[in-house]
Image 1 (cartoon, helix red, strand yellow):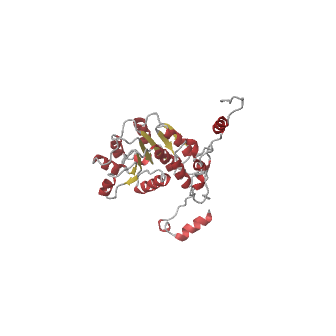
Image 2 (cartoon, rainbow, N blue to C red):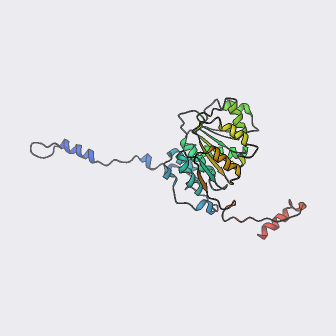
Image 3 (cartoon, helix red, strand yellow):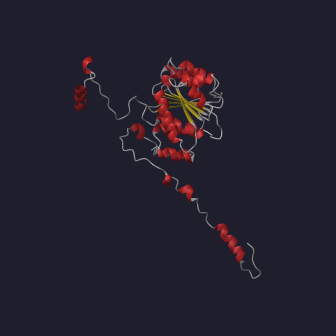
Length: 294
């Protein structure tokens, strides 16, 4: 610090020091973004241990894009479920995953969140393909992707059998970052040269045990041939039949295996069944009697 001839700091020097040590006020926009979220009402439904037995992680622990975090919280998610805690950080590293998970445990978000995080919207190419066995599941999954990624400007497309092929072809001439579909339809579009998968870095297989049934497996294996060699594959399945193991051994590279299931039913849920005669199975009074007996 410069001194004046009398040994006392000059006014200009003091001002310089004060400017240097003045604390930096954080950007208010970086602090209150959560306060501006449009959160849904709290979910008061009963939750089983499949969802509640977590490690206590937060979604922010995974260093996700703020826009994605906004979609996650506005979707109603508060903290990651066990399957999300196990899958999301591993998927973000680029590793292959074979996960055994039940429906109703947050499984869809477990692969949608890392898929959305890894998409670069500056590149108008298909970067993620999510394959499912049914049209209904494709529509449901695409809706989850759209809701989680609504602040990301990610273009999501659904393509399944039983719909107009021409409409899908026309849609593919527009930007698509994430494609959700059934194996047969996606393969058809790929073989026609309108669905380009050379830049697709991630393939997700939901209900993999069904996708590897004789109905879908030939189309699935042909489709994989169009993907780049260094693609990432995430497989989610409630059961691990021999076909899943064989596929894993052939196509997945040192996969991280997640198995949080001791049984197929959700923990804390008791299932009942009763034998009835054929004429009684659609009998409403009989059904009501059984329900009252529980």
